[in-house]
Image (cartoon, one colour):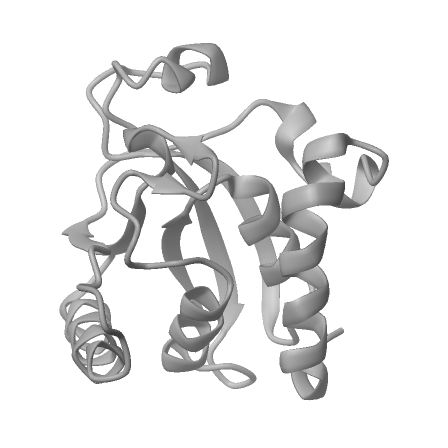
Length: 174
């Protein structure tokens, strides 16, 4: 059965790239969620004034991978204790968030955060909210990391996260 999950963990380039390499994930799409502007552009979202988070919608086959495993991957590829930022990416659009689509996802996300909090010295600030409209980001953002390996940001920030995930999740890497 195919389900969807939506995660925000800073810049969507890395999050999308990792999830697209996981067995059972049919497609991960970069976009924007939980803001106030209809059909926002990247330029608008980057101002922080639309209220959107850069997010990734993950379509996955539940017979191959569970939502709980996706949560594990999500929390391993970003820092959930940084409020409205990931490293040098600063602004509400870079917040950590799980945007649930049903009660089961909400409960799983809350349980995972409670479990992880026991292992962190700082508070986990990942917001857990009902998903509002997900707007697909512009075409050039889709698959950005793998199509632009020479990009300085990719080299310094996204590629190291991607390679770490490739090692950590080798058994489920495509």
